[in-house]
Image (tube, rainbow, N blue to C red; front, side, top):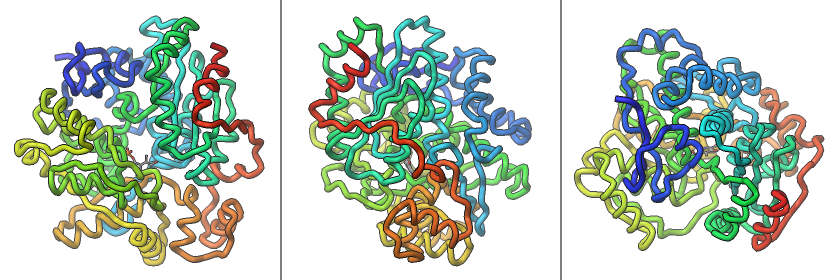
Length: 494
Ligand SMILES: *Cc1c(COP(=O)(O)O)cnc(C)c1O
């Protein structure tokens, strides 16, 4: 049987991967999912000998079957090159029986780089394959990390323009400066007076405005998405789980067939879903531990089967996980329902109408591999301090959510299996919180603080923030949310 993608809501024909990558989301509102989860089992020996790029090719080839070998290899080569500060693309840091899977050695210092380095090349290639003559426009509102990673990924890719709106309020100084200094003729960055929700809502309105869509069609543009619902982002995330398992095996840190646990600090449920997919492919994983901050909708869902986002949105010190609607959960629901799109339609209708749904007993019984808990801001700071002082290892706030939830899990269950914790951002991206945890300096200016901390803790400042303060601010435009549509029109000269 050949791999093909279908919608979780069942309202659309099955489509090729290249079409799924181009469209982003299905026209019935559902998400694309693969029909088959190919088994890794007969290739364990081969996988043990692969480097990151070879492993990426192996996985991508199983899902994106309508791409040629050469096309996939070209995308992989362009994505995973010297943009990454570590030649191995990822690192595994051993701290007792924990392995921190450092996914932040890309340009923007967060795990989003892992997938957003390759997505633009997959979109470009899919567009060429479908003989699309229109120029692609990527439109994104960002709460911080996605925007910059997308800008870096799409900068100077031919035939694509990228427009990012960030909220003037609510992102860190480093995040803002990273975007304002973005180079590339095809990149456009605009601040919005308001918070992330305002920017996000305004963009959704633009994308659903028929008159606007027609205008763009007439001018030979098509919109696409860099959001984490795109299968071109999801599938490349499977790679690092598979790669790190076989790296542990190669380095004799685990035995052949030994089961491990994986902990993922979670927001939109994309990263942990990739880990779940790798388990479905036969990677020896026992528990998937879903770690949330105080926006703990997922913790409650995993423990009760009820998803209820009727609650206050909290701003925490792990801002990239401040989210109440985890879009990628729909793919997980589809899987545990036995791929029943009728059930999914009902649940998503409940969510839309009542901000709430409850899954049935059959689905609950299929959730046993998933464990959920959360950590609050104070615990997060405690975790950073503890692991720095006891093990001389520095983690960021998001990773600390994972670490604290893992500690709770271990205490409760006594499970001593070797465990991978996904480390999703460099501590230098969230220096203020690191300083809150370690109390090393009275400095308030974020850039000065970065320099001070780097000297005190004797870790070199990563390239992505080092020269930021002196870089030219290229993008200075700020608009009100009701001006967004006109700003886009001006950029596209439509
Ligand atoms: C996006 C992000 C997350 C959450 O990942 P999801 O795939 O949305 O669950 C966690 N940590 C950091 C640093 C992020 O940028």
